[in-house]
Image 1: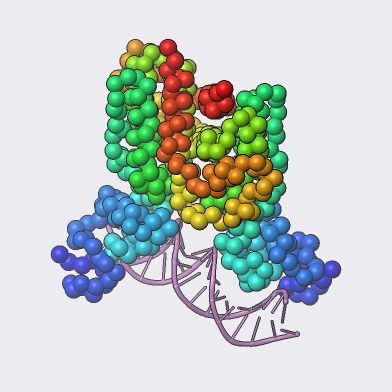
Image 2 (image 1 turned 135 degrees about the vertical axis):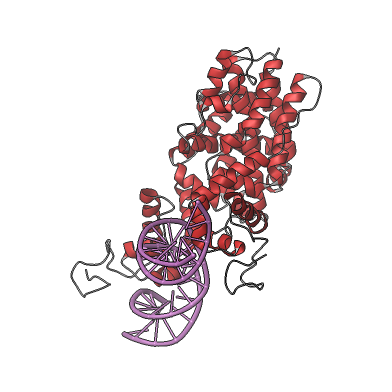
Length: 222
Length: 222
DNA sequence: ACCTGAACACCGTTCAAGT
DNA sequence: ACCTGAACACCGTTCAAGT
């Protein structure tokens, strides 16, 4: 119940949080995660973190090391917290496809966290749970060896592409360039409806499901 | 021939470059591009840029605006400089696939530049030339309207996913976790060769070509 | 119009020092 | 072992001032 920093006793300092006992690595990561989720990656700074903990900047260094170690620690948490991959359906095709859809939905739900993992180069680790389930279902569907390994990665690539494109569209809501600049009549000669479809945003989910369906059906050909 | 900064006349200051006339926006972007290619994004800083130009930091602000405007300007250059998309082959399938392969190769050749464009949220603009060519070939193959628009994006998604995954593998050369940690015998029960294939890095190009082939063949079904 | 110098408000990181 | 304070070497950006 005793404030650590500044004048003894009374509430003061930049949001001391619930600190009263000694600081721990876990506590630091907890608070870092809060900042990450509520304020975004840019605002997650060693100094802001220390301030929120009511602690000197250097205390962070003692407990978790520098900024890089901090982000790595957060990535571990994100990966661990990411819920299980759901498998639904009866026939192998449907079950495999459902994995891709489930993973995509999960990642789309927290795009900022995905961005952090991606920036730390740990996407592969993020996908490991999905990998396991995919291997199980693919072998159940009769695939094995190089075929199965390739199938796993092909599906994951599809998910990655879809999620990242989705995120790009999100960040760039209105087209920076008008359709008239992007498409000349020369590009789309005698098809006005095609131009319409090209300029209007298309359903990323529908697109993903289509590609996934084609891919899985071709992989699980029997 | 007169140095601008520091002591009049003689060579001094942090690499004045070839500046002697008045500074221009194009010159600033030129030098920024050099730094970007030779030293990487992290090293491209307003201050380093000013130093290399032999100019006060604030001069950059006058000519191109802040850091964001600088990066946006560079993105425009990158997009403009990116070579044409090559179309090869006879039949529609092969021609369409060749576009995807060509684009992928081009992007893989300069991963750092792609990263900058992606970070600025301008990936869509980067793909516009490929879009044009794809639309042309897809309509030639008999597709139109919503079908064609979806086909374009599906192929581009595939390229994005492949390029970004490739880049991840590049940044994470040795597995951070050993195969034994990632895969338990429980995951891959009675198939030792599958485990082999899962732990060894697979041929991203082969994988891409496979997915692309499946997708294109399914799109151009006649 | 074009550029400089100084200043501001930030970063991450290190290091000696305290208890 | 755990934490502080001060300092260092960076950032991007603004603003008054010079020519």
